[in-house]
Amino acid sequence: MVQPHAYEIQANGKEEAVSTRPSVHVREVDCVGCRLCFNVCPVEDCIQMIEEPSGRAPITWGQLSASQREVTEDWEKMKAYRAKMGIDIH
Image (cartoon, rainbow, N blue to C red):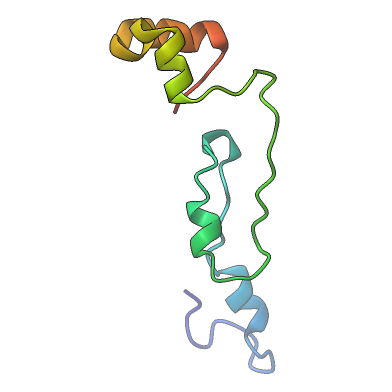
């Protein structure tokens, strides 16, 4: 916070107010594409959701369960599958 009388008497305080205002930074490495930030952001057109290809063919949980049931039922096998496929979950 800018203390009263902490700036020039002829300044309007705008620079100090803007420079001390908290700002939001998206940690893209942690983004999972859930769109929660996009849905609740009060600033119109502030956030753009851009799909970045993973280089892997898309697969749903149902498809994975049907093709490799053991991966969906055993935690260690799921971890091995994620490592093999290059899937990093934070």
